[in-house]
Length: 122
Image 1 (cartoon, helix red, strand yellow):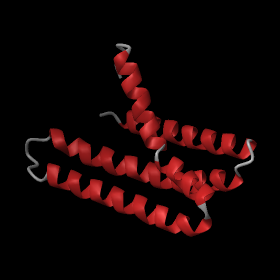
Image 2: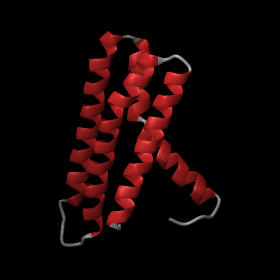
Image 3: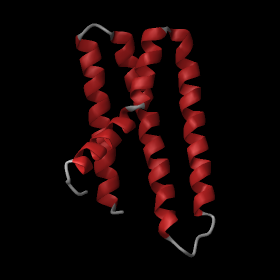
Image 4: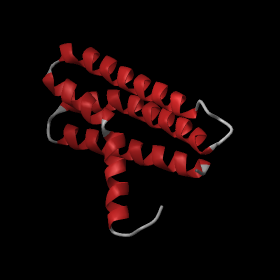
């Protein structure tokens, strides 16, 4: 994968997260907007963790690449759970905002799947 692809994807995740936070703020869900902005950096880190681990999967000289990928997936899960546990005492609105921020990365994957279903490459 190209380096430009990684940075472009991070920009899209950031744009989606900020857009969701702005929308939540405009409709009066200020706690949710704050939660989205709090969860967004973890979403960016999660994407970077997987992206860097996936690069090693194509290398036949690296037999531990799959193991590293599984370690990164576990780390992603731990980061998400820590964020959600930290947000839980702040109320449901903030908790759902953090969850939305964490899932900003997933929204990008849905966009990729939609484009692939339409026959677009990339």
